[in-house]
Image (tube, rainbow over the protein chains, first blue to last red):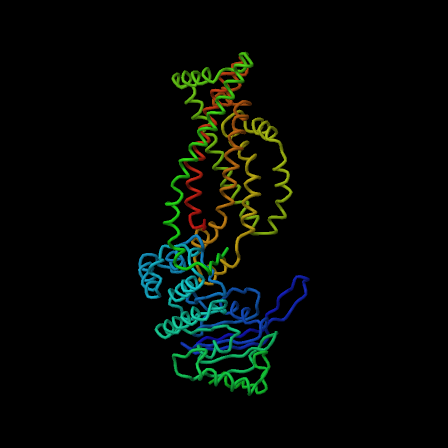
Length: 255
Length: 274
């Protein structure tokens, strides 16, 4: 069980003025749940993810995983692949593994399973954007994380590449039963992936609506079922993607 | 620092093998050009010596035979060894201390502001002043010599490495942080590789500066080494001796650069797309 409570997160702009990015935001996720955060740009989605991942020391927030403070078992996938360009594909994955000897064998196995066996010893700079994301995905799952945080990881990829990565993500998630918090601005992507979607308001961001998604898997963003749910949500709340919900359903949070 | 090459497909991976094939003729031509350059240098020297007809401009042949006799008497190898040892130690001391201070200054702005004035002072003190002061304070010994050389070099290392430390990509550091990578690994595999280009720039510039200063230090206060020998030859107006020692020493430095510094740099840079 993941429990996040952000009391307040402020940041200073270049002029030194303070802005409120997040206030009184509570987010929970059951073990193995796939939660998507959807909201307008600038609403603090990435900020929230950084807080959960422990990358933001200034925020007034508490994050607990199974009742304990978070530990080493969090994977993080960023908007860019963020691989170390001077390390090979295999070394990049091994970098985040604590044990070296047995870790290398596991990393190799995972990379081969993800069709990266041919490029184990290649440097990331020689790989396509899609392959770099695949390595980043492998790196995230290599540590067998309890919690995986993903910040629009498939943005700026062509549709088939993104679709393939989504399939891999779902397959790995179903095998490892990791809890996933996935940030996106693309509602169709969220509908294709999530067990539950949290819609965020413009800044200071808070959750305005939670929507469970019970469509059977595998789903595709362009499938009719996803399309129908998409239309239904938007006809109920036309301004949903701008972060304004007419029917707040905050009680859904604790089901 | 994250290089994206969306256009490149798996073909990019194969680019490594292609490099060796098409570039086969290039080393050969490079050797030819370098040889021609060396030959013209000797030719110009010979012509100058013929035109001058003066003992202060000896023929190349005289200088080379002098190198032979100095090597045979073991005088040149002895003094060369002493000087190279001083160069190596002061180079290592200056690089380690300079890199540590540079990284710290790039990392902590408070320290940067605190030390910035000292750095400007250090950069502008003439080498001669530090050498004289070190000899006066520490005596005419090797410690004073090495300290003097290191003090001259440290500020320039600091400036270069600090630049590198400021350019470190916070997004890559975030990755290490998010995955709780151990401090040791974070430093060696994430942080340091970002500084390597700056360390090499500092090392290159350092080597050429240090061996020049070492000679001055030797000339002023040591009784061994190339600098000391040059001073002796100067007293006797022995131009052939001066040129013989200079030529050998400069070649040794060139060889070190070509056989140690450049291959190491190439190895550490092999990930960069060409």
